[in-house]
Image (cartoon, rainbow, N blue to C red; front, side, top):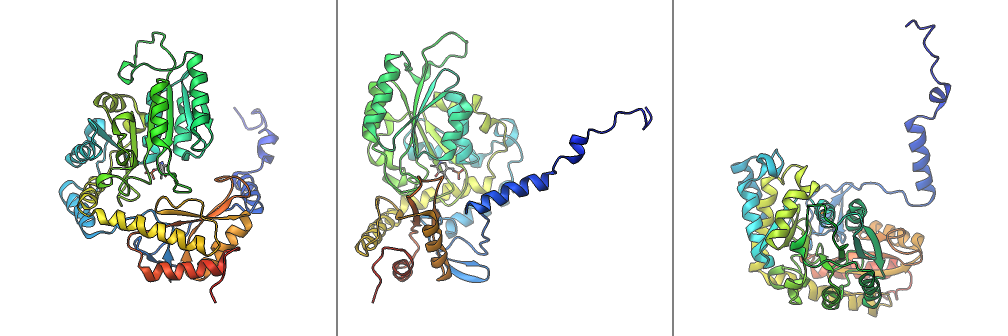
Length: 426
Ligand SMILES: *Cc1c(COP(=O)(O)O)cnc(C)c1O
């Protein structure tokens, strides 16, 4: 074909706005709404004091709750596993990427959680996607707390199950939903009874909640939720991302602390927060874990965790088990800090964990307070819509066991100066 006989290029293509123009417009809209976010570069380890733009800043928004990310034993385990196994698992776990470091960690995790078995995923995000999509599908129902983490929401959406949301920690609402589903004939019999034969089966109901919620650090009413899931024959999945390492015997989580281990079908937690490493686990029955190995696409189609990461997580579990005072001290100081902020006239609706919310109200006031704090060398998170409802924007303080009393006192003083509504120190 000659140039002349070929159809002229469609003018709608040639005049269509390019990628830079379109995305630039979208970014400008995000900017105008005051919602533009950017990365902030941390130039040192996740210690209470970090370096940002060459300046020392007190860090109050890290998940390094127990200071384990740079604990000498955890770092040494990572170094020695790297020397022994190399820098990467290089392959999917189901091909050649399942290494002793993974197997040892999974044995340790199952013993720690007191479950039959455990499986490590590359991230908590993937663990939730892979698990929910393996357990439920079209025609089933995921019943989800309204404040559940994005990874739980995305997993439920990807599963194609129907999603029903219950009001945050509202067990009366949860019961209403479960009773309604039960009347419609939706509820599973036993987890082991899943069938791949395509035969018609009763729709499954999977109730999903966090144990310690990431935004406010408040606790789910797990005993009541477990009673309801049992009564209505639903399965229960609990994400302990912010509880693992901090609550329970040897840091095994809030479910373990409440003695509910055997009443939760699917236990999830991350190794990348209090445990100072990376990756995540699912723990439960052997049949659950074997099913995930066979069906969870987020496990199957991804490279295994680096051996150094697995070894670091295992070392962190040893430190947590040996030094329960780390978590106990963290929670005690968080309660003290919450009480002190409350006494200063601030609204701290929850002080049940190492995460302390300070309610401010308007998004712009919250961002201004966070900026004023950063100007004073204190880095806290500003949480605003759509993460929380309009008018309930808040600062979120994440305490670390390694913060000193002096650092906490300095932060309280700065908060009293920067957050509207606080009584100022004279
Ligand atoms: C952080 C978090 C995750 C994701 O875990 P990653 O290992 O960081 O991917 C999942 N669920 C909850 C509740 C979380 O807070």
